[in-house]
Length: 344
Image (cartoon, rainbow, N blue to C red):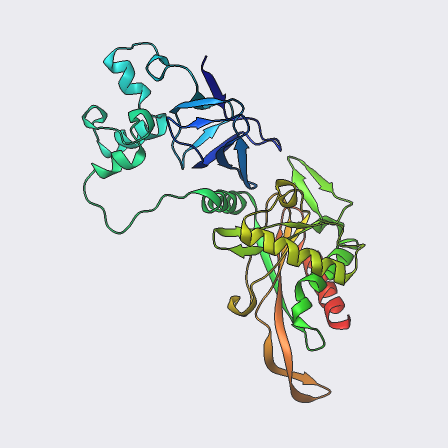
């Protein structure tokens, strides 16, 4: 008897997922709980085991496609030739094309009946359609995985958040820069207690003030930018926070972060290091309302007691959602963080 495996509800309000990688092939014999497929969500990549044993009869969704929860992904067991009833040629043609691919074909003037699909079960893919629409310039690579999620997330934040950025200098001369990120997390968390509107979310017509200080840390990986969450930043020591940051960064670069390690941040801190430039205007990590970034730190002239001296100067930027945070309050917050960093 055939088993139709559908994309499961992965929680956290997620309604769709991307087929990142199939771990089986058609015709392969698998046991229950064998690795079946990797699903990329807007949080992380999840490996899903097979819920049934048998032969992989039909893989119905190709890698790189985004489908809603409940979509049949693969058929295990049963007769490969008996999975679908006979249908008229017109119905078969429609079954081989998703609505998105059909729309692209219409826009490009491509006759779908003239194409031979290269996807699973002869499905016509977007690449099949674009490949017949005439030569195009440059190499094309579809947005997939983490890069697709980043693109969607950044586009939503830019579209929905009226963002403003405030910038000021900070003297980091007395700090061990290897501990920059944990010190920044600690300074931000302590300051957020005094500025609760920056540790908040905007939900429809309500501002939700959060009483926890779980701060995201932006980490660059080979697959793109991810933001793991460091919990309880206001109560833990800098040494403890530093160990957590190092652990999460290593997991992020190895691609082994757990879904819960990417959820629930209330504010985000980012430091681009030597490549960061003087300062940045970072995009707010929606649904948060503010983000703090630290630019490149280096020896620059500073005036101390009327004399020009060399100091380790960097710029601190605060980008904030102007619907929730006023400019004066954002500036006061930024200055308070800087005082804590300079006086630590």
